[in-house]
Length: 115
Length: 229
Image 1: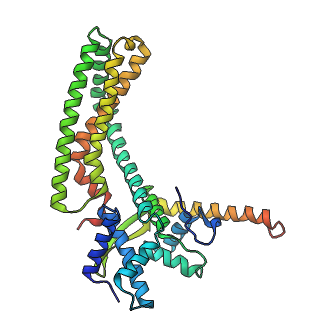
Image 2 (image 1 turned 135 degrees about the vertical axis):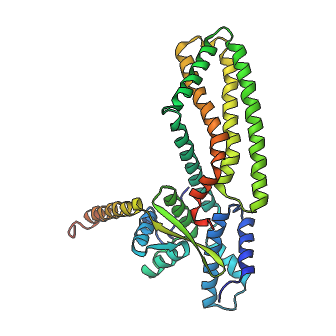
Image 3 (image 1 turned 90 degrees about the vertical axis):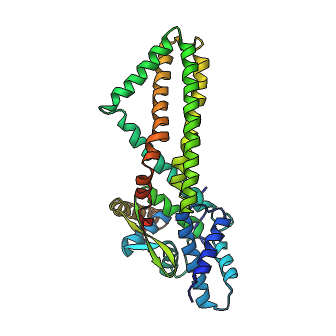
């Protein structure tokens, strides 16, 4: 089962992996909570990644060898950071290309004049 | 305002109460809840810890921590199968392939002989005794490790407990052989398939009962390098 991770639109479903990879590509390493907050800030609250969907996605990417992890002690507790592996960096390029292609196709369908 | 050590311990207990048994996942979720609580406190410093914690937990949705737990189990199962496959491949390379072929021929000769039925019963009893003994020993060893560390690691549990499940598969298949040997294995193709299957099952059992548990420490270090102090 894959729950809808965006509270506001089902259209974004399926892009979670791309969003995570893209953010990690730009930020070297990030932890789970930071990712949810970063998305909220970047989209001015338009997108909201739910916790119940974020961690399964991160663990799946880690199992696929696209993410590497490291743990650091921060404020009385341990924090798990994620960063892209070499394969993860390549996959980010692929995923972004796929997304761009998708947007182009949708543009051609919904607004042929702009395409 | 930051959470103190006792509140962090409370969050660990909270994750355990919500069925998160494994330390690596507990640690990640504790940090997440802690961050969210601290974030809530910046906006409302008067909010009590328990209320903030429950609010943070509610954001995980109606299934709570179940989704992260399930995905973690899937991911770790996949990793274990990868280790198993890596070991199995070794048995089809020189020099181990000599042993693999020998097992296959011993099974083939035995199952095609007139003593096939007696042989299958002996094989079944031997396999049952070995599997039962190893499963018991690994389980006891796992409990001892738990008592010492006080922490649960998913891969560790799979290594020391999954072996028993593999043994059971082998036993159930062997039991079918006892029946198959009553004349059904006179079909040469069926005999070849059965011998190949049992050769692989014997190897998988040996790998999961002996080789992988013996390498457990290295595999755990490889899987959880971030937690090595």
